Length: 139
Image 1 (cartoon, rainbow, N blue to C red):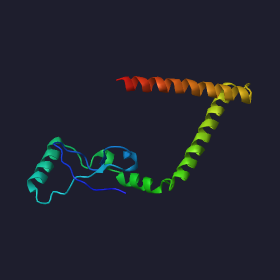
Image 2: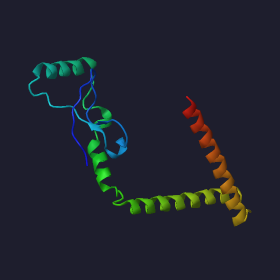
Image 3: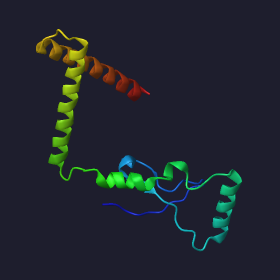
């Protein structure tokens, strides 16, 4: 679901810039409206670009077709349940990687000791995250 709308600003936004949430998924994409009926603005814009000596489209937009193809090939969850299963799978992979890195640092530790060390590390991380969030909320 989506919508089209128009707005105007007193500066130039590059085509395909994303505004708002989930811009990495392509939401909030802004494209300049056509200049039909506004020939003076089109000429002014071309002159402005020439004066700046810039090549258009900008470098970061030059391979946008590859980005679009990558998004099309990415499997997005079709349902909430599928999304939750993906989150659980990523969580299991993260836990396995954490245990693996702790095992590499502590080769003689038992499975119970590794699990306790992982839980201590996660508690420290959670405490630091909560402290940072409280600082941000107090501003």
